Length: 465
Image 1 (cartoon, rainbow, N blue to C red):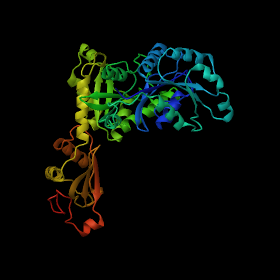
Image 2: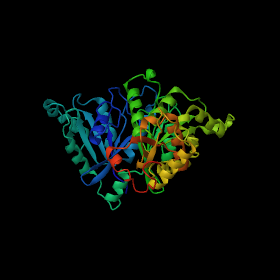
Image 3: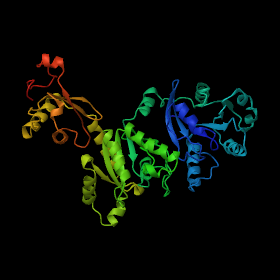
């Protein structure tokens, strides 16, 4: 038996997404006063007491979507109801019962699953005292909550735990921890309509998110857990990004922020391009975001079947990407057709290989030999009549691989020579497809006093590497 799932359901604007974020203690779902903000199913794994369960946020029942996606949203709700073990029916305590609440209640009444009725927005004693009329909606326990007032979160979680199915041998602590701690997090980013959601569905082998020709269909960053060769990977579908000056409303702005945050929390970023469109300013802004966060990146050219039909070649697109993004020429390039699931699994295998590079550690002796040979081939030029000297190098971190060079004065090394050294390190060390963070540090006073105290693995003397 898999980890149990709890779906939050109800009409629009009763605070489902606010409740979802409140329970998760994280801003995951976009919260906005606009009805129908949530479209796809949002998920988050919770650990409460001795149980793990997956919390699912769904779109508002009965919404007429402004982009004519009503049926797609309804399909996401249907799948959320079908996969859930427990249903949390949320109503608005301030507004009181409304006809749409009754329609939702009628729909849920026919579903034979444990239910919990949550009267949200009970921000005052008066509101809490006026909840009796909600008992007619469902024959189940009723809980009052207030996200705004931070009221009764623990009571809500305790009520959910009581409704979860009995834990089985499969739901062990080790298994749950493995689900909670994936091996790798992939962020799928790109501008609008490049096929990110189609790729996610191909990866999940199910209709996990809404796919539409409507630009901006995806509004949240959606985490999808998948198992690959027995290992759990999280793929993060992000909203399509557009120019800042073109952002139409708060929902789009929050989507942009979430795309940026997804890049920061990812282990590997899949930067998507449409094979039929030229690289845009938005693409360059996203790549700059990836670069500034030192994230391993794979350029993914989607809709490759259309490119082949148009006479394009892999070499021409690869050369185009190198010209446009010279500063990230180390990023590998993949060509996929998400609608046909073509090369999707190969792309995941490539992402795993790139991730392994980012967590690799190199021995200090090997690192110093590579740096010494680089200096012998191309010595850093003198500056202000002073000779730049590197005493030794050491890797101090991973994700990204972080290397510190001890030198006489960091100001003596110009940027062109540091770029040369980075190129050598990527060619000679197992970091050929990931960014390297390089620091130049002058020797400390203690190192000046004891010049022969070198890190383990450094055989060179303290004054010449």
